[in-house]
Amino acid sequence: MSPREYDETDVRVRPGRRGSRPRSKRRPEHADAAEAMVTAVDRGRWTCAPDGDADRPPVTAMRARELGRTPIVVGDRVGLVGDLSGAVDTLARIVRVQERRTVLRRTADDTDPYERVVVANAEQLVIVTAVADPVPRTGFVDRCLVAAYAGGLTPVLCLTKADLADPEPFAAQYRDLDLPVLVTRRDHDPAPLAAALAGKVSALVGHSGVGKSTLVNALVPEASRAVGVVSAVGKGRHTTTAALALALPEDRGAGWVVDTPGIRSFGLAHVTPDDVPAAFDDLAEAIEDCPRGCGHLGPPADPECALDTLVADGKLGPGRLAALRRVLVALH
Image 1 (cartoon, rainbow, N blue to C red):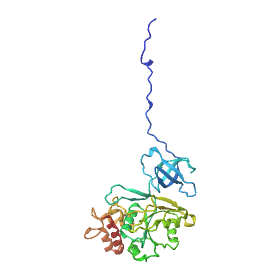
Image 2 (cartoon, one colour):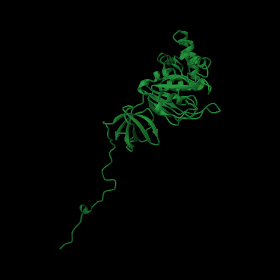
Image 3 (cartoon, one colour):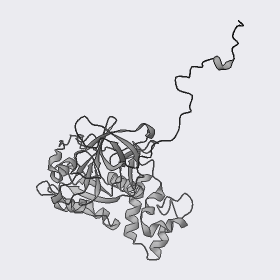
Image 4 (cartoon, rainbow, N blue to C red):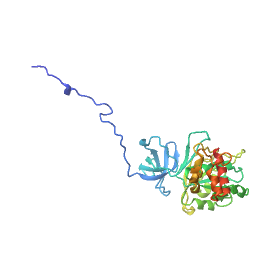
């Protein structure tokens, strides 16, 4: 009997541990993902309101692997899959992030290239400033205005502690910008502010100690945000440590208010001089005639600024231009 002859078909090849089929780069489309709004962020977990509805139980979610390091902040509109019941110990997945309509950004200072997104998709930026204790600072307000214009938010100035000092001298500096100015007192209900927030997503920003958390507690009593005491140096103690979106009750007109941490500085390294006038419909087209590199500050720094031509032609009030340029100084 002749010995058996072997060929390559007799050799059993053990497949690799990862399999012989190439891994597909296709990912699920998640067409059935539920829409939601991010209301809080904490150590790799996101709290979301399904359909932006505050009456439904909030859902805790993690970021899907396919999103990689995609940043997700309070106010982002996201798609959720998984357990959306909001029950204890359940976890959903964020599988997509919608394009942002507005973005409030800041940097640590004017030389820091790293942008920090404070809140996304807010319609209004409410700049909270006390008229006394601590002393109001136009520089901070001006910087917040620049960030609002650059990010597509409508700015609103809210002056608190009007029971301590007359708010009009400070408010008068912003009248020519057609900026809504609201005044609150510690001994009065903030009804005018509630009316301005009704039905909208609004972010509140301000130095520590100006009464921002006190306003939030009055608007949303169940929020129970900590209230701090103003420190001896006049800038206060931080009482809010992370941005949080809170639903306004029905008797306040519904809507959302985003309470942000007290900010000591508002860097604008990400903003250009064109971003501010470009936010105004009547000025956006005019600045196209400015020379390259124009900072829109007027003579002597920018002697050929097109905004001066608008004033000469009677199309722009000199008071409004002066107020706008004072804001622009924050960029220089």
